[in-house]
Image (cartoon, rainbow, N blue to C red; front, side):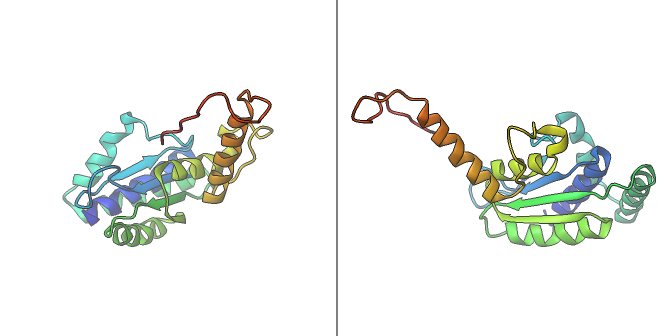
Length: 187
């Protein structure tokens, strides 16, 4: 599985160059138990990678000749670098599974070897990674006057708290300041 993770990191770096924006990769198997492994790639707009891009990552993950695959990665990187001075940026997040640290430790050297700047967010939720990637690319994807860019976990938590307080302020209250209705937040 480590080989797949390393190749997923290589794919994500190439995607960052192709989009000329930061991309994210999350080591997680979501709600599955400890025995599962998985990876999610976040596109520059903070959303999940388009399903139309999955064929390329599957081909990389299953490529039998490592030297040939490396040559293809280096060639693709050189083509992107010739087109633009943009340097790839890869945000990495991971869940709390015991093997997630090892996967991250294998991904970082690969991303660095290809030439990417790596931002390790540590243990985060998938929405925190998506937030960080979106905010890293705020010029393209965020209305600057409405949401200040904060491409980190603190920025995510601040925005979540601000949004929650704003939501509470919209409720009507009686004179005792007790809300008339119960607000249930299910995450």
